[in-house]
Image 1 (cartoon, helix red, strand yellow):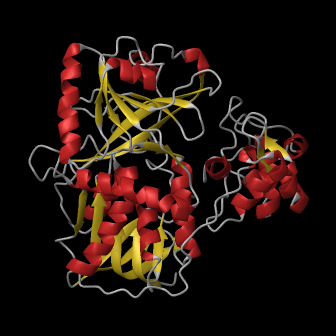
Image 2 (cartoon, rainbow, N blue to C red; image 1 turned 90 degrees about the horizontal axis):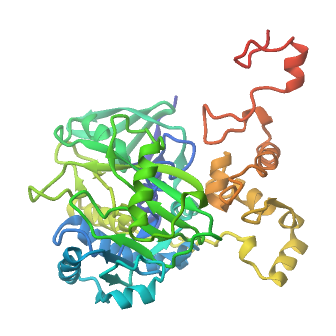
Image 3 (cartoon, one colour; image 1 turned 90 degrees about the vertical axis):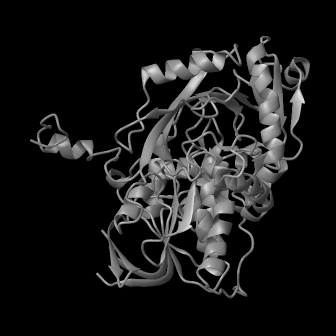
Length: 503
């Protein structure tokens, strides 16, 4: 296969890789993004709490603290440019007994040290006035008004699409297998889809970032431990909270939260358990019981009977502790080989930090590597927001249907997603070519029925628009087909052997 040449190759199309791609797309650089999955954001970037943290929690002076605060500021600036919505909910860190109440002042002082604006120490009455669903056992809270929530899917897709609009090339189903170092410089990555040559490589491989580093002998002692966190999502008509609600943090993390989502549902989770297999996103009976029990201490009206979905995500917890005691993001130009920038151990607050990390990558290239970039005159500064039929007024819906009748055909009844929205997603700058890719962009299949009624129609639309047979439509990529073969073919062949193979 022919070697492809670029100025910069980014490994990983999660939120960090996509934000770096977007940042570099402003300049006269040829940029490629390599992603082993079939779509952007299929790892920890979209299986998380979707919170734009204020920055009250990270240890002062760490890269996490710096990136969190700056990232929160940049998201507010970038959201209109990307055509995405941020829900400025604010967040409460709730104390449930006198001992925990003493910790509010500690967090308040840490917030001030991190430069977080507007943080206040609230009484029990103030906390309950803000969030009536809180447990009456609440003894006080820390209020952080700059926190918010975002649709995590839309954030990743928007960053990637904006990068693609400005010339970045994305290569999906492309897995790095080997890296070539010549005279101390990383020159080429070899993948299952050919070789990629570049002047610079950016390692944004998430839970696999340590493996990428080790391919060139970089930081052999750095290890990513995968920590699985499980979540529950509730029927938006049954469970309603208006804020992000954290328990008092522990040494293991921010704790099991209760939060409103960008689409109005209530979400609880995550727990945090180390796992051996990095890709293990199983949901366990023990884990779900754990998060339900803990969340009810904060919001006692939560009930398992109102759950409409469960899921889990895996966090990339690194062992990089520059101060000897606090885990931190590893963001640096490799000291082992030239031409490599590592972005590793990007766990929470990684999502909110992503635009700041991208900004830091540009700084590293300019100030530490001595690169100079010229801005594109033809740079497109904005991405048009995706049409959300469910949010339109009656008149807006009528006008849209007049222009394109496909918007008048509802496919997902729960979330009111139309055929027009699905077709637009399929033909977007980053095409949606699987059922889950459609789901990530349109919110189809996320309501009470969880896709029960929209699967067949969505598959028909994908088949038609991609010009492929129904038997090639997948849920999330290779190995996840819905249909094996036509029933007529099986009957004519005399039945099956139990493994969907004709006999």
